[in-house]
Image 1: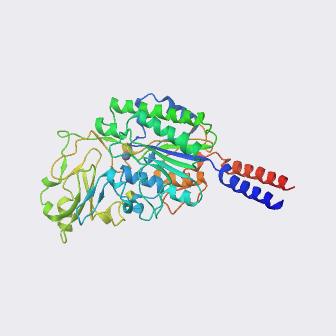
Image 2: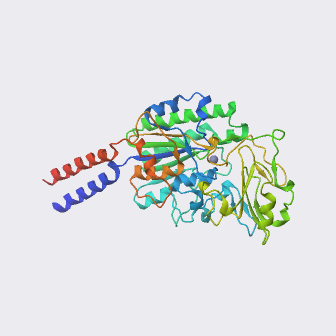
Image 3: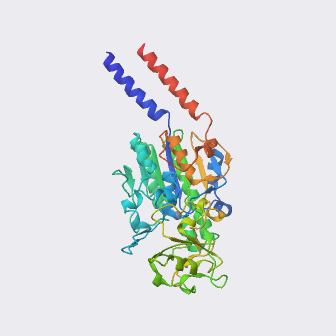
Length: 431
Ligand SMILES: [Zn+2]
């Protein structure tokens, strides 16, 4: 009699400890969603979400403000110099090999170098995690992957709204409801694509914001229809903003080959023609020569020895960073031989530039309603997510204090009350 009963009690106890005190969490990233993008578009669903939840004025992404590094900051709460995914591009300075964003997703050693993404921590604590298209999803961390995952093909169309809806159906209907996952990260590749191609202040971007808005409406409808509204928190944010590139004629472009005293013969390896950041590994004994030639060569180019990069950027202290780091002002790109960079919009700039800041919305049972909160940093989202999931965070650079005010004050007591009620039920069962 007691054997059976204690088994029931233990099962019940572990159930209430795990699931009834903590809600599920969906983290959504819309790539390149600048903090003020909704200004020019009709966004009824974003507006509704603000009424029903929390809006931050803006969020400061980590530097370098580009996709893979910034998303890995969301997943780990670490500055980029601490998590080591320092660029979208993987490279090897000895073999000269480079891998672009997509191929770099599959280089395990690039991602798995000391900082565990939240999926793995959650899984180690007995939760179930999933990820769809989120940067970092394809990699294996200390022998473990996110257990439910979908990685896109190399030719995936990141802006197709029909695809978006299929992905949402999968995450809500299958992963959260049928497979009972606790945490899912979900990635959309827009409005980044439209921002690059047409520039941030273009009708094409405004239209894309309306597509994003419809998508947010669809997500919230699906959550409602599947009866998950009361036990699923949703955070929607982004990795970086977007700024307008300045054109030839308006400004003098930064072209290293045209700088007097600079020669590619002195360079062993370079990462150039990739927007506002350039990195150089000079040949042995040439560092000072290269540095002096570039320093003060262009009014809108900041040239640093790696250890001189301003500490607030947290882009200095990692062995993967090359000895000379070049950072251009907003609107400029760092070109090597020729100005190859012809996009209308770009990111990767200093994270204090307002155009690099990102949007943030959250809604769900643990969030306050109709609340506008002060700006915070993207690193702070990690401790917030760990708190919501009830898991112990790894070492990180965020601050829960900066974001805790957005939660309903009864988060702990509500869980506590429920816990108390359940304990009472067990006592009653025992009697
Ligand atoms: Zn991005």
